[in-house]
Image (cartoon, rainbow, N blue to C red; front, top):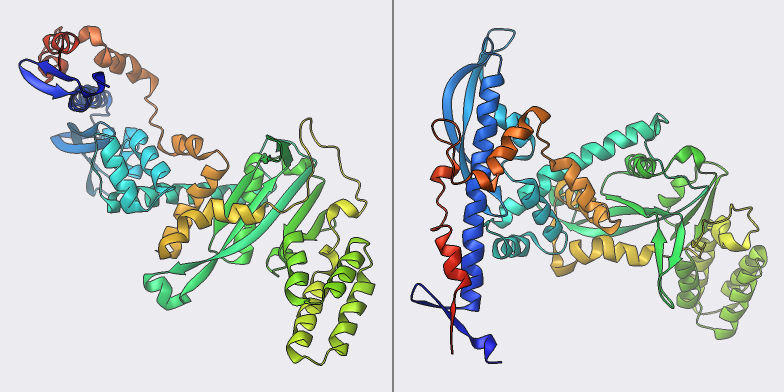
Length: 476
């Protein structure tokens, strides 16, 4: 206990361990910012030398700022003047184009990933506060929102491209599966601004997941295998096209022989029944819930469930109709008729796929075919937990952008996708120069002539500062 309250003295100053840790972190970020600044300016210098001098005229340097997890990095890059085919003058920063800053903005890929991941868990305001407190960079909630929108637009472009490929039977998926389970549902979210005026107070966001089965991970716990997901506010046809694109990005759809579609009976869900290879199943939770909600007579309930499980569907309809005709209570009659209408509209899906005697391909090793019904929890875990709580309101575009990342996060593909969106890959011809600039051994040396960056870096009394850190004296 005594050690936890210890103070340390550095150059006569008394510091707690808390203060010391923050000071070291601040100074390490300062060193990192200086190293990144010099690396960027080195790359800019290489681009200056390698440009087409006949087409690009050097017009001096301009200062800008890159936001990183270490804080804001100020650096200079060269602006060039050029003329297009019509002779009109324009300007370009080769460094910005080389690193993709013209598309993503002046935010580093690591910081962008941190912002997206945090925004998937909490409001933009709290996400900005968390990022500001845990990194060397301070951002606003508007800044966090802007990053989600910029990368969300890129995610939308990717999904639309995959949808076009799937529609043209040119899917890129490599995973092979003979049987694919699909589940779909919707969640109503509040709208804001112009979308609220145009579309009403709320709008349904459609959600779809697909997987190949379930794997047991605990005594009574299973995880879905090969899960993919998508969510969007758009119309039915566009959503199905997008959904097929998401599936085709992962799976080789030509190898899929059978699909089991699970839904709550909504008409838009049954639009996915395209041919005889798709077997629709009414979600058992919603099916059973309709009986318990609309039938108060316990004996009647018992009889209905018996007929349902024995696959006597026509007899089930006759029994429900008979009860509706025999009661004098108008409300009870309406309940029976509502149940009858619901079951007749979903007649083909009342019997679960497992009880139909379908010739299904065997599951992969360690994978089980279980009864569908994962959608309810996925609606909450993917969308509801982040987008419906605290009475949040969304624009259609903003909601779609965040939903894309929420589905990627739920399927374990968020980090990989963000790296593909924001990855800054240095061309081979610049790698050696950049590695030289990052070399710690070069810091105290003079590299070539003129400014080399690290010689003038404001590193705090190195190495004496670190020597003082290691030789601290406890004060009790």
